[in-house]
Each structure stands twice: as structure tokens, then as C-alpha cells.
Amino acid sequence: MERVNTVLVIARLDADWSALVDLLSERQGYRVLTAAAESDALQLAHDVHIDLTIAEDGNKEFDGCALLAGLRLSHPDVMRVLVLAKSSRLSARALREASLYQYLRKPLDVEQAALVVARGLETRELARRHRLIAREFKMTDSGSEIANQHHMSFQAQAQSQRFEKLVYVSEKMSTLCDLAKTAARTDLPILIQGETGTGKELLARAIHYNSSRKTSPLLVQNCGGMNDELLQSELFGHRRGAYTGAVSDRLGLFRAADGGTVFLDEISDVSQSFQVSLLRFLQEGEVKPLGSDQTTQSNVRIIAASNRPLAHLVSRGEFRRDLYYRLKGFEFEVPTLRERTEDIAALAEFFAAKHSEATGRKILGLSASLIEKLSHYDFPGNIRELENEIRRLVVLTGDGEYLTTRHLSPAVQSAMKRQPADRSNGFTPKGVTLKDQVESLERHLVEKTLHRHRWNQSKAADELGLSRVGLANKIRRYGLNQEGPHER
Ligand SMILES: Nc1ncnc2c1ncn2[C@@H]1O[C@H](COP(=O)(O)OP(=O)(O)O)[C@@H](O)[C@H]1O
Ligand SMILES: [Mg+2]
View: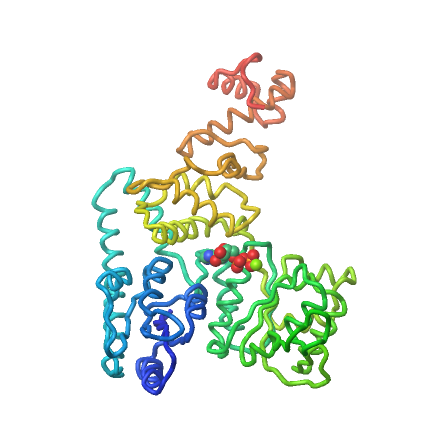
């Protein structure tokens, strides 16, 4: 899969900046996103994978240098370029904190800026490859336990895939993300279902930023626990005086997001009457603010999410069938983490890197036993719970150490190895080699059968399909006797 570099331009787009944006996207083929305010820039950095950002300093709305310094902490692997105002001076300290790749000075020389961006991205790619090779070298160089631990965690990340901010290795997520990329290119509504913490919102964001609507807003409304009037006015807007407390006109999300996407979270919670309004909006694309008799058109794509299965609510008559069908132009069921335990190692690695970089901790990696423990746990809170767990471990682990099972929360700590549901009734064979395990299982089955038949050897031999002599041999071989310890 070819990866297109993403460049975030943080500036008020005057003629020079617009020329740069065109040049970067059309001639150099980057994906270019723009933000004119600090909050937009931070939101984008949260939602989308960004490779390089070029920010304007001396902007009235924000301090570009400080913004880049903040971004360095939250997203350390984004390359940073600053464009200084003509005569502005920056302290050495401010420059150091932002740890810039380069800075330029206004008036903006568009060709020069484009060149700096291109070279910056090359440097970043080289650094990335260097890191990979260096790690690989270290691994093959030494056979120590540490190197093995490193090897294990490194492998998980090396094989992981990305869809914007989603990290995964499992077949399930891979199929889901491929379909999501296809869905993103259409304009159909999307319904995302799945337990809480599985990544529904992250998927919605990824879809928006892979759609033709990506340069228009993505606005989010949580529909849970909202009364009708409030929800109506948030989404459709209201006129001043439409109800007590409506002291001024309000635009409403559906119009504010015109050309973009509205993400409706916890859609299962909305009332019947709101369902009617929403259905009408989906059919007509018309917005009528509360207290107004004028309608306006708005073109938004709806992505809805629910952690309760809507089909079930429809069959119970609690959710309108026609709305359900309207919403699910595409339908995604994000699997729980316990249904894709292959993702646990890659995600744990990703969160460890993310939080150690954000807090400045120098963590060496994850121990193999930690990854094993994590993969035995059920994660009722899914990925959100895994991230919280890793964040805590990072904070409690010293520089130059590995994350281990030591500080795991009690729930994870006491997770038991998953039992294979086979005929041995939850018995886990001992030993490493196949021969040892087979013998251990054989011993267990012989002993259990004898026990059940109160040591009547003929009956036990019959049940096991052995001759009496054969059974006697096994009893001798394994040193079994009537009083012996029974493994249940
Ligand atoms: N595949 C993933 N890769 C990386 N982070 C993820 C992934 N899925 C979820 N997360 C993170 O887990 C948390 C919960 O995800 P969110 O999208 O809010 O879940 P939901 O909306 O289903 O409750 C967020 O912090 C999100 O960034
Ligand atoms: Mg959510």
C-alpha cells in the first residue's frame, strides 16, 4: 500500500499560503490539511496521522512557536517547520522547546518552503528506516532474554497496520478497515456498532478524513442523556426566544457542518420524536431551526454510532425501522478486543510508545510475560481499558526499564490463561515438548477414568479401549495408585 504523506498547514491562508498549499498538494502530491486556529490544529493532530506540520508565527490567534512546542510533546514524531514574521525575534529557549526541523522567514518564498517540506519528509523517512534497522541489528546481535523481549514487542509493531489513528494486525480489523476505506469514498450514511471503547469514534474520524469532505468540518454530537429540546436545538439550531433560555440565535451542528460530516454518538438513546426529525433530515436535507418557519438546505454526511444493537431495538419497537435502514448505508460492527486478541500486543506497544514519549519516560519495551498476561485478560472496557492500563504502567516504570506485569491492576493480574474447550475438560497439559504434553494428558485421563470407576480396572480399561495388561502397564509407568493425588 502506497503511503501518502500528510502535511498540516497552520496559518491564515493569504495568497502566499494558498499558493503553497496548492503546490504541496498538486505538484508534490501530499495530502494537505489546513487549520487557522489552534484548537483546529490540535483536533486534527488528534484525529489524523500527520507527518509534517508547517506553522505560521505571529498569527493573532495563537503563538506558532508555542503551538509547535506543545505538539512536540503530544505528537513527537511530527516534523515541525515554523515560518517567522518578517522582523520577529524568538528566544533561543522558545526555539529549543519547539525543536524545529527548520524555520523560514516571511515574506514566504513558496518554492523554498515546498523544498524544505520535501526534504523534511525525506529526513523523517530516513530516520524511521534507521531506527528499524538499528533495532533489528540489536536483536540479531544478542541472544539475551532482553533481546528476546525486545524482539517480541518489536515484531508486533512492525507487522501492524494503520488506518489513520487506528492500529491493528488482526484479520478482522483489516477487513473492516478495507471496507471502511471504500465506504469513506461514497456519500452514504454509516452506522458503527460495537461495545464501548472498541474505537467507534476513531473509526468515524478516519472515515471522515478519508472522504471528499475532509477539508470541511467533522462535528460530534453525543445523543446520550440529552433531552429532546436540547438535542433539537444543538443539531437544528434555534431562533432567539424559541424557548426559555434561548437568548440568541443558534446555528446548529447540521448547518455548521455543511459540506462535512456529523458524528452522532449513542444514537440508540434518542426519543421517538427526535427519530422522526432525523429521518426527515436524512430524506430531505432540510434544516428548520426551532422557533423558525424557514428551512435551509444543508449537505452533511451522517455517521451514527451505538453500543446497543439497533436491530434488537427495532425488533422491540424502540427504534424506527425506516430510520435504521436509512442510517445503515454501510454498517460496521467493531469487534471487541477479546475477539481479536492478536491486536493486544500491537496496541500495547503503540500505547507504550505514545505515553512514554508524551511523558518523557525512556521505556525499553514490554516484557514477554506482560504481553502474555494482557492477552489472557477479557478487557470489558476494550481498547480504552488497555490504554489506561498501559498509561499507568508507563508512569510507574522507571527510565531504562521494561514494562512488566508488576504494576498491573488486580483484574488483569488475576486473568487466567484461556482454556481450550476440548475433551480434557479444561485440563492443561504440562511440559513443553509434544511428547511431554501427550504423556501428561494421558496420565490425567487414565487417572480420571480409574477414579470414576472406583479403580475397577476392567471397566476403566474398557472405557479407555485398552487391554487389562495395557492399563496395568500405564498404571505402573505413571506410578498411579488409589490414594494418589487426583487432578480432578
Ligand atoms: N485501533 C485502535 N488503535 C489505536 N487506538 C485506538 C484504537 N481503537 C480505539 N483506540 C483508542 O481507544 C479509546 C477509545 O476509542 P473510541 O473511539 O472513543 O471508542 P468508542 O467510541 O467505541 O467508545 C480512544 O482513546 C481511542 O483513541
Ligand atoms: Mg465513544
